[in-house]
Length: 540
Image 1: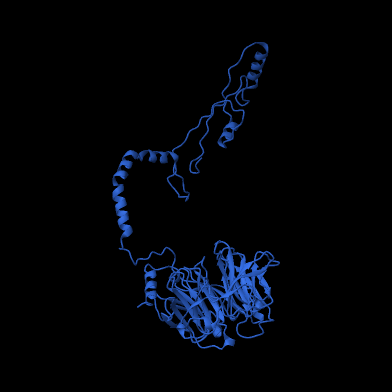
Image 2 (image 1 turned 90 degrees about the vertical axis):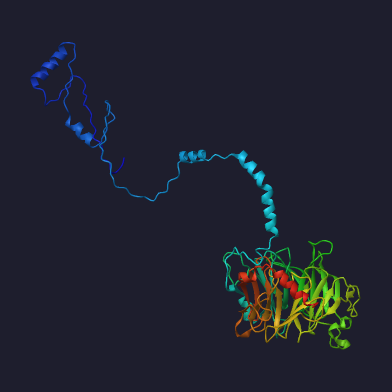
């Protein structure tokens, strides 16, 4: 019942049983006579219609009794209220209205089919024409939000390592791109041989990430100088130690993560291991071997054994007398015949080709297919071979890092203590470009995995330089201050799964995860053409 509508007046006709009269409407004599007559003779007296004040009062209060025997009559007065008010209640479309609308839309599917068949050839012709059109060359569609700045997402550290003044010597992303590992050691001074170090991991996708509490901490009795996660097994990570050992940890085993190690044998490196890398097997691409390089001049390939050992599978030795003289290497005494290797990078196009950087300032092109025996055999269990094929023009000091382009088979970068980055082609000794990025050392250089013209470099002045050849061939596009007081940045790695992330570790024991702007993660339309032009300068 509407709140604006008054209650209807209920009207009922009282109906009483026979021989019942109201005391207010009959005298005592008549009542006695009626009673007597009823007792002495058969018959019935007509009912008296006497209105009841009690019942009419009850009816005004809308009280109904279950003893009602008559029909209830109702009436409504035309007192509908004119005032209205919105209650902001959404109402669904009625089913009848929806059905009526659907009935109005009549589709002639036969005619539609005939029309599509008639225009099919024309539409396909125009689509093919648009596919080959160059009308929109240079136009770039960006469906994501643009970020103008490079942002620091995480600042990670292990306080116990920082208390010992240990430095971050290496960083590595796992196969899923969600876990970041770093190694702690010392690259400048201190007693490396006896100082304990650590390997720490953080899962950046984990809820409740604590930047100062790693998910896993592995205590290592020797300084760890390099790390490399397995390409397809997210929990396996290899490390190279100052002692010359190569080890592999399984981060899913919290109590005892160490699963393989070389041990200290005649095959083990005699100098610190500065880089480790996983190699796909020649016969089975899913089966990987482990490669290590050291300043003892050896490049060794290891295979895992069931007893937890890493056994030597094959090896190479870099000897000064067997390096091509195209770059006029300085003459070395026979006692200094070994060429110390500091870094290595494999070609993304030919798995047999790799570039090494050496302490003498040179970058060397090498081949896994080399068959010439090395002059320097050191009692190894397998014959060592001489891999060097070409030497490139040197830096002004030791080369600390090399990186092969993932987009061009002949291009690679190198950097060293002279603060320069060289852009080299494997087809000629002289660099295509020499870029002075720092006054102090450059410790690491890496090509972007998604932008052919972008690379990053870590400097001894505490900066991470992001370089984009599309914008300039002489100066960085962005220089990020990683560490204060010019503390060196020793290592950096792009995330190949989450390509907007870049991790860098420094001498303060801190790892910073940077989120790159879209300028560094989205390839421009003519970028590969520009890269080819850079590479073609080798023959100009």
